[in-house]
Structure formats: structure tokens, C-alpha cells
Length: 321
Ligand code: 13P
Ligand code: SF4
Image (cartoon, rainbow, N blue to C red; front, side, top):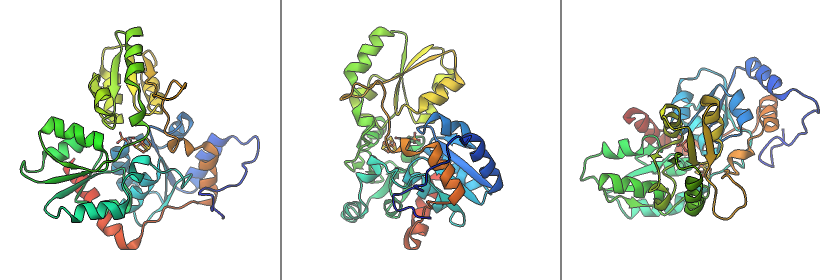
């Protein structure tokens, strides 16, 4: 099957009940579907497991399915392949990249690492397999603080690629980690002004913020954390209204778990749109997921020469968190 456009570019027959067909194919092929909270609701509803990047990595390791379909972005597919090299790992669209991972090209990161040979390298999971192979410990937004805090106080650390998360950890731990200057285009875009306007309209609302956001947004947070942490907070907190400053896909699960509460997406700066979407995550569609299961394409491959090196820092993270 030709996947030169990055996905199986075959029209899906009109009138197909796609959710039913996908469920059938999943059973027939002993496939598991993993979905990140930022994918569209209809994919989250079909997935066997929905989670943040830490939870999905943990689950992937435990699966005995022959095929794992990762509905998220490319580095998430790579992480699954690195942890499960013997399985067929599929993604609906290989074009689903990540601006944060792209802000850290492996060759430039290697120069940075080599110029600080006495530093431990801690990298956020939003990186390519090649960057992971240069890393000592991988972290996610769900465990970064815990992992960094577990290292001896005098250990010199390079942290990449997210400068906002790195800054936040430095501010909380008093460390002076050397930061790679990368960022996510979605989380950098939130408008403080618009968030404060929303807060005026909804004075009782709690503000939920992902640590990939810049400091001015982090400072107005009632709760700061990974997508899973923000979700649990929304479920357990007494407030009825929440302003959510992370990718808008998470609102699907928040609304599903708390139908009686109101969730308001925080708006970005330069847009008339009320919410903030990751265009890469939104490349995962039901049609592409269906074709992926039918044709078992496109497959994620990780270079044999780096896969073992890339696994070590992920395994270390899973042991530490
Ligand atoms: P989580 O670690 O919260 O899943 O976030 C992943 C991500 O891509 C954030 O933009
Ligand atoms: Fe990457 Fe940002 Fe999209 Fe997360 S929201 S996958 S960090 S581009």
C-alpha cells in the first residue's frame, strides 16, 4: 500500500459505520488502540486506552496485542516502538509531528550535550528517538519535577527541549538546569489578557494550566500539571467552572467525567477561534484510523542503531516514576 503522503490515501466507502468497522477490525487483528487526550473525541471514544504521554508509555509496555495503533503524534508512536520493538506499531498519519520535538534537532542537541560533558541529560518525552538516544533520563510533564528532584542536589543537568517546563522546574527546585530553547507552538500561544477577561466573566472558575505554558500564564494557575493531573483536579475539585489552558482535546474527557461542570477553553493570542488546537493531533481522523487498521500502514520504524540507546532513558524514567 502506498503511503507516500504519510497516510493511507484511499477513499473510505460512503455510508460505512466507521466506529463499528474499527471495533470489528480491532478484534479481528488483535490490535489495541491508544489515544492521547488531545485527539478528537470520536477517537478517544473508540480507544482501548486514553491517557497522557506517561500513562500511554506505561500501558504500551504491558500490552500483548500483535498490533498497537498510536493515535497521537509521531514521537508517541516512536516511544511505543522503542518499548515494544517486536510489535507492529501503526499511526494513522506520519505527518503528525510535534513543534516542540522539532525545536530540538538531534545534531544540534548533540553538539550542546557534547559541550557540557559533565552534565546529566534530562529530556522531555516530546523528542525524537535520536534525541532520546543522547539522553540519560526521559521525563514527561507528569513526572518531570519528581525525577529531577530525585537527582543529587549538586548534579549538573541539561534539560531539553521545553524551556517553559525547564524554567518552571528551576523555579520550584532552586536548580540551575541548563535549558534548551524549545517550545510548543500551542502552549506558547495562550493569551493572558483573554484568560483574565474570562476570569472576570466567571469569577468562580479555577484556571488549569499545562507547564508547557510561559510564566505569565503559569502564574495565574490554580492548578498546574500534566493533562492527567489537570483532569483529576477537575474531577475532584469543588468548583463548577474551569478555564483550561492546554490543548482543547482534553475538554472531551473532562466533560465526559464531569457532565455537570463547565469547561471553558483558554483562547490563543492571534485568533478569532475560542480554543487552542494542536493541528498535529487533529490529523488523526476516524477515516485514517480505519484505513490504518485495514492496510496495517503506516508503520513506525526506529533505526536499529539507536533503538537500544533510546530505550535506556525511557526505562529509567519508568523505574523512577
Ligand atoms: P502530556 O505529557 O501532559 O501528555 O502532554 C503531552 C504533550 O504533547 C503536551 O503538549
Ligand atoms: Fe507537540 Fe505542542 Fe502538539 Fe503537544 S500540543 S503534541 S507539545 S505540538
